[in-house]
Length: 167
Image (cartoon, rainbow, N blue to C red; front, side, top):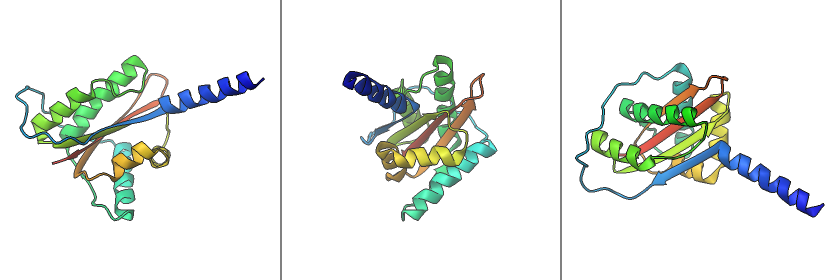
């Protein structure tokens, strides 16, 4: 009987971990890379703007600076959101490539990333990130800019990629 309880607890922890995740790179990069990355514009949806505003409201409530949106960050985030939908996995796969892209295209010195899946509202997503120490630390770090992509899969489940940078 104890074994089944432990198994259930482990299953819950694995599911919870897969629902939201974050990644951060605090190392500074001294010189831009020479890679050629596409630079593109990105138009935020109303939903995305709501979540970006909520993150800024949270930061300001903690005495931190509000972050400015850079379309290139959202464009890069969008590519990763598409990747997560295609694999149906929440991950930070290829984070280093996204980090290099933002370094080369917008001069990012530090890069962080929060991802999530399945939340139906911007507030629920923010609440989940606040409740997670690693996500909260990304939102409270010394960043200057951010971008976000939120997309739905064929079943209507939302996938989120939010990236933060310091210039």
